[in-house]
Amino acid sequence: MRRSEICAIALMPAQTFMTHRAKDNLPFEVAEIDGGGRKWVRYDIHHAAVLIAARNLTDQGVPWSTATAILRAKPVHTARDPLPWKVDYIHVAKASFRNFGGDVPFTHKAEEVFQGRIEAIAELAYRWQKLENEKPHTSHVVCTGLISVNLSQAYHVAFARAEALGIDLGNDDITELDQ
Image (tube, rainbow, N blue to C red; front, side):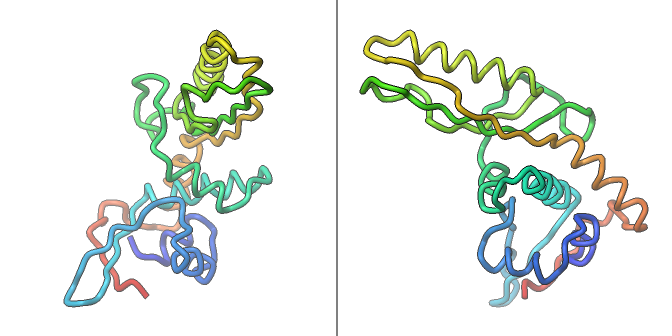
């Protein structure tokens, strides 16, 4: 898929995309292929879907850099859910935890990214909070925030836009010079 196609699917101006690309601030890592001292890149529908998900997070007031960090993070999967583009309910969410007293370090991270059903993510965040509060010398650990985006929806939008634009998704072997 060409850069122009991924930008069209994500409704992102190419200049904005390239600015983020130059700053390594895209919500995915770009595979670079060395071609005689030049860098070549390859994009596909998955990149477009993740761009859409990042834009959906920014629509919620999440800064772009935070959205990209959430989507680049290796998530904790809540279950063996199907691939996000095959269902309607796969979310990616960042949970933030805070210890309101006590000096015992967290067993888990203070921030964690999860992937799965939104209700399973909330349940897992609650279980982590409960486990932290069962430790001695921990006053009160709370899940203070949950930022979520429906990754399945982003995939469905990406596929629909690609079809409407007449983009051939079967041709993901296109590479282009990284400029």
